[in-house]
Length: 109
Image (cartoon, rainbow, N blue to C red; front, side, top):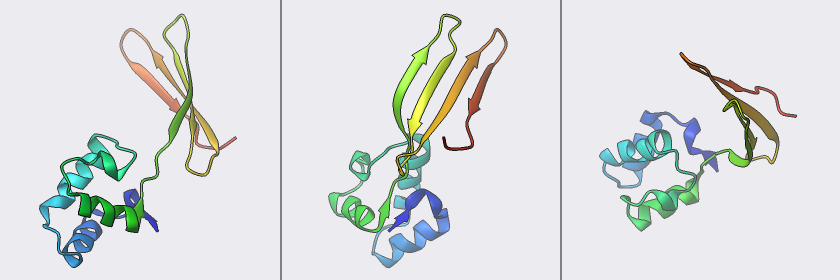
């Protein structure tokens, strides 16, 4: 099985065509993945059950799960994420008057 987020739009189009689906479905699927950030194919409720099953049988959705969140007095938000391989990464959102800074760890551990 392959992470569906790792394939290009064109590869998704080809997969759908080979499996008898309409090309516009690729746009719907990409919206679910990148605009709405779903974590399962079942959440893609404008797709047929058959298409959702086809996707689930051929792909998985790699998404991080929030396992802890802490908000400090200065409104800084620290988030701990669990990746699909069960490893942990952290991120911090630091608001200021004129901007918001996001820091995401690029190493596990």
